[in-house]
Length: 395
Ligand code: MG
Image 1 (cartoon, rainbow, N blue to C red):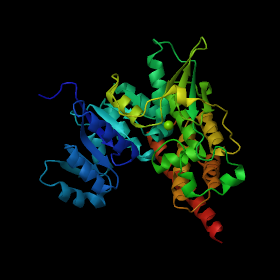
Image 2 (cartoon, rainbow, N blue to C red):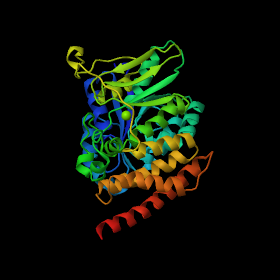
Image 3 (tube, protein in one colour):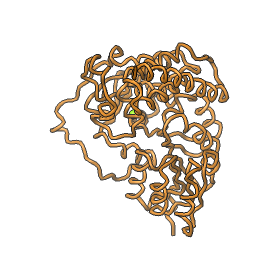
Image 4 (cartoon, helix red, strand yellow):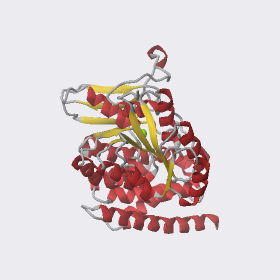
């Protein structure tokens, strides 16, 4: 007989960094989890081998040009194959699914996250851009349909875990830790000349390329402040960022009496992923455990928004609210893509964000249509500026 406590999981973005680590967790606990739905954008071969290994019920390949190949590779295995984002949104509402891990990259994860929320699914949220662009709408939709959101982002998982120990007392302040990224000790001149390869070399965390570049610019921490604001219904003024290069403390919560609860561990994304999938239970994980005698030093410092202007812009966007975080996010997505293609320099990322934040149409209380329209408008505004910047670089 099937274990009645077994959870049926949908993984959106199953071939990415978070998706493959989630499957590693599921591989270690086959009695607890079953991957029933797997969705990927383009990596169709990896998607097919995952579907066969985990005996998925359904797969969705978002890019329709790969549909035939996936269909042929999986024929005769009793696996349903679909393509396109609309299919992700409908398949994620399958009554058999208990939990949806949203690990798509960027704004593209918004529609499917909303679909999961509308179906009242428990959401293990790894797609922070969803809350950055449309936090109010996503949280309200989840609440209306009784969908619970459990954070997967390591900092937010840490805050969530710290709050489990508070006995219901509200957080007075949240301290989000930041590794500082690969350029933490670099001068502004050195950072200005940073290459794609240098920016992708994160000192602590092994992550996908979008979030790794976001960590190098520190825009990631700004996105996380916005994410925390929605997840924990916190006034952004009460969310503090502290640079902690060892990445051992994953974040902290401060209470009215000044007591601070922290969550610690070696940087390993499987830990917050497994915690979200298994919540409220703690399952065994074969990771590296902390040895306090060898840890010796944990250090902390304030972030430097002169060398990391994108972080300052993110703080501005949080304060402004409305559609400004959506503007910041879209400009950043376009700029990171161009930086990864080596078309623009490192500080052109923050330059593009600043340019769009000053010019794009602002809405203080955007609805979903406005969010989608703003995202599209800012992408083209950013790409136009990027084209000009790239052209002047090659002259
Ligand atoms: Mg994080």
